[in-house]
Figure 1 (tube, helix red, strand yellow):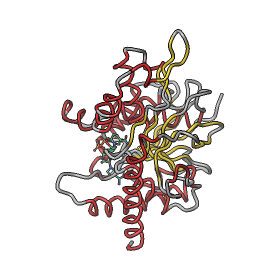
Figure 2 (cartoon, helix red, strand yellow):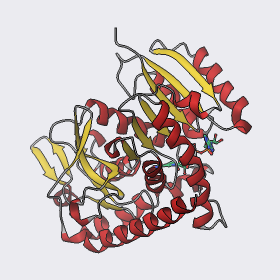
Figure 3 (cartoon, protein in one colour):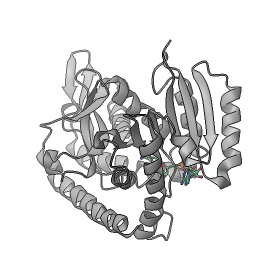
Figure 4 (tube, protein in one colour):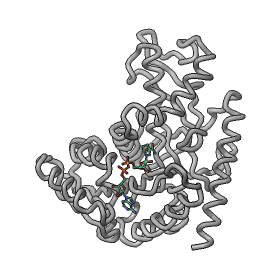
Length: 332
Ligand code: NAX
């Protein structure tokens, strides 16, 4: 039997946490033959709720679940973890200035970064979900210099999956037959969903999405804004932000990273830039990637003129964020 993998979920008493931990315990993230030990971290005001989640995990009698650590102590939470999914954080609220959110997250991610650096297992893989996701990942990277940069990523897979979903609805095809959309940039409304290389598997072979949709106006307009603003649409409908789709996409992100992407398929991940596509090196930016043996690699050659203007603004936005982070990191 395989050794259990330790998976940390921060903010585990929240709504994404509540959807995510049962998926992990059922093998959705790491496979149906992979035992897991789940570490859950939250803050003191949520300690009782966190314990309630632990009770439910016990009650569900998951065969793959070999242990649960539920704690408000960041060191206990991070000790020995192989995978860290950072869902806890301080999202921007109405009326808050960007710098207020930034300073709160810098202090949260500073302590979590150093706990991971000191106490996580060697080669721990980190996925930041909490918004602003690219920025929080960058803060974590700054404060955990001994964790290899390639091990710190952020979630844009939800946006990627939303794009697949929109194409499948539009063409009335199975979502599993659509692939190779790309989310460029930030997990925010400045992202650029790109279908220029996307294909659909049809009975007569793989066909480009653009050729099948035959409506460039929709692809260049409504499709993009729908994906960019889907989070707001969910909040409007549910009076709560996306949780099950975020949790499921976080599982997809880790599963593909650890177990590999299928041949000929790429996915979107927020990763540190090596300068590909003119994105300044060191930024955390969403690119198309393939994964093999636990390592991601940026897919090259997906340039298209349609996204030049948009990616220029994405890059500007990321550079601006990096500079603000450098400012806060310098101050603390
Ligand atoms: P909730 O408010 O339901 O849960 C957040 C949890 O984090 C709470 O239990 C809170 O007590 C805990 N927390 C706060 N500070 C903490 C700290 N210092 N250490 C540990 N835990 C802490 O939010 P939820 O709906 O679960 O969303 C979580 C985060 O995901 C938010 O930042 C949200 O903006 C972000 N999202 C990111 C998405 C993405 O695609 N990257 C999409 C979904 C989601 O909006």
